[in-house]
Length: 307
Ligand code: SF4
Image (cartoon, rainbow, N blue to C red; front, top):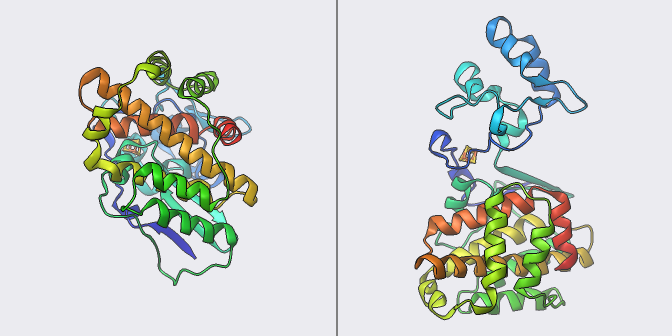
């Protein structure tokens, strides 16, 4: 059974219009089948391919200055797509930003918030997200059943986001670690970091969190609570059902609350500094959080542990 959120098929890479191209700053590993195909390409482009692949334990593209993929051209378009077509990309490139969780009775797929276009699709969706499948969705897995109950609680629009998150923890029979925002910033700043802008934003929050005015910000965001709802539903969908046991699942629910608190306070900080916090600001904060945390197992598990 294959399950995915209702917005899943809306994604289309915005390529040269993307501010944070995913072909910059990451090591891009090449799967075996694609490597064999690239090795079979003849002529000048075949030579270019082979010259730009590092054949180590895990073959990958040799990044150029500023950690750009060697096939990302001056117009920020991919030369492999332009020359060979989209279907000839390696698995990582063709799948990004999609994720797939293989569970015993199903595969659950989604779009990762590390991509700004995926973030736009997810956070701007006003309707409640629903999970869909080509087959009738059934399960007797207790963690998936609990996760689905949590999603319903997170989408209960008769309640505030804080109340919904409280209900989520109650359903998991757990309570959160009451770590302060300042302490949370210290933990975040101690983690492996990709983007110095993320570190600067966290340092600014650490300096200002105790005098942050959230009253005006709450009023400002009152008609945009669906953005927080989507953020929390995305995280619980992505990280809860693949927990090895119920105990770990409880930590992951607490992680969602922690992530929400961080995103909320970063939003309040930006609002206090510049007098607004529009959807693109929200997408950017969520994108940075996702890139820094969800794509590093070490960082992700550190947060699961402290949550
Ligand atoms: S981050 Fe998303 S929109 Fe940007 S280039 Fe990558 S897949 Fe495309």
